[in-house]
Image (cartoon, rainbow, N blue to C red; front, side):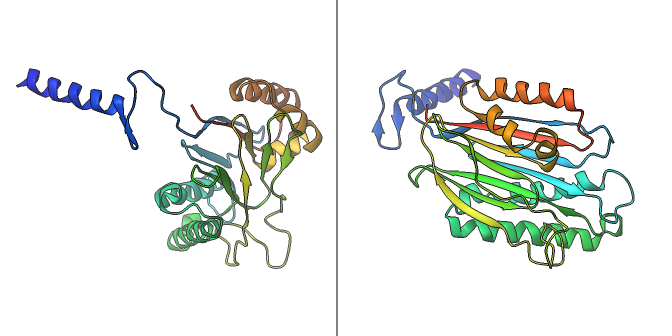
Length: 258
C-alpha cells in the first residue's frame, strides 16, 4: 500500500513539474513567479517597551507599530500591532482583491477588527496602531498596491534610480481628529499604486527607524546594490551605533520574477 501511495505522489509531482496553467512545460525549466523576496527585522528599543510587529508573505508585507493607550502593561503597544497584523492576515487581501480601491476597504476592515477587540477587553482598552501594507498585484502590470496609516513609511527604490518615499508619515496624535488603527475616528488611509520592474526594491519602516536614521541616510542605505539581507545588516549596524529608544522595524523586499 505504501509503495502505491508513493508512486501516485511521484506521478502527481511529475505532472506538476511539466505542466503549467497554459499547457505543457519543459521539464527542468524554471517557472516565472512574480513575488516579493523579502527580509525584515525589529531592532529593540532601549526603553524595552515593545511596540512593533511585521509579517512577510510572498505577495503581502505589512508592518505595524502600536501605542500603549490604556493598556495595563508595557506590552500593550505590541498587542495593538499584533491585532492589526492578525486582522490583515485573516482578511487575505492579496487573494480577495488587489485593486487600489480595495486597499481602503481592507484598512477599514482591519480598523474595525482592532477597534472591536479593544472595546471587548478592558485590558486592551484604547490601543491604537499604525499600519503599512503592500500587496503585489502580478496581473496589474505588474504593480504594487499600498496603504498607509500613521507615522511609518513605505519607500520605492526603482532600479538604478534614487529611492523615494511613497507615503507621508503622520503622527497618531496629530490632526483633528487623529487617525490610527483602533481609534474612534476614521483611519483615513493613504492608498496608491506604483508600477514595478524586476529589480525594484520596496522598503517599509516604522517610526523608530525614521527617527533613528533620518530620511537622508535612509535614502542612501536603501539604494540598490546589496541584497535585501545585506542591506538590512547595514541598517542594523547603524542602529547599533545610534541605540534607538523605540522599536525600529525595517522590511526590505526586492521584486523578482524567477
